[in-house]
Amino acid sequence: MSSSLIKSKEVPSGDVWIREAKADPSAEKIGMYLTHTGIVRKSAKAKVRNNAEGTKPVSGMRFSYDEKKVEAAIAGTYELPGIYYLRVWLNEGHLELGDTIMQVLVGGDIRPHVIDGLQHLVGTIKSECVVEEEIYE
Image (cartoon, rainbow, N blue to C red):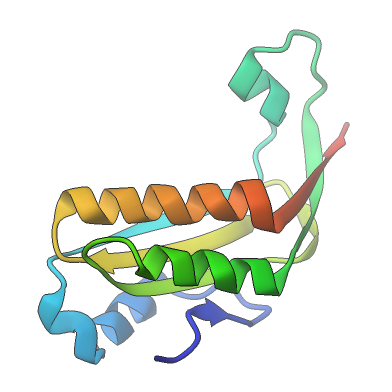
């Protein structure tokens, strides 16, 4: 199995990822793919999640990740039932509004397994593998 963490400065094409996934030997077991694309938004995390009044708008973000932790999150997701294909791309450095933060593709046998896989992988990456520092206006 090749590494599922894609290291590139350029945001990968979702269409290319799907074509590659369909050409992978695992494709015969896969009935669904789900993607997640995280974007830098103007509304601060505290405002969106906790409705924190008086939170300043975001003008950008500093983003970094721990590669070993991401690889461990990917390995853990492959252990879930029905998950056969994963791709992860993470941005780095100073990001502007509208920039892509991360892109994730999960392929598996049936919808509940794929939804659980996406939830698990993105949740683990966000909670254990990355540092997001919002920059306020």
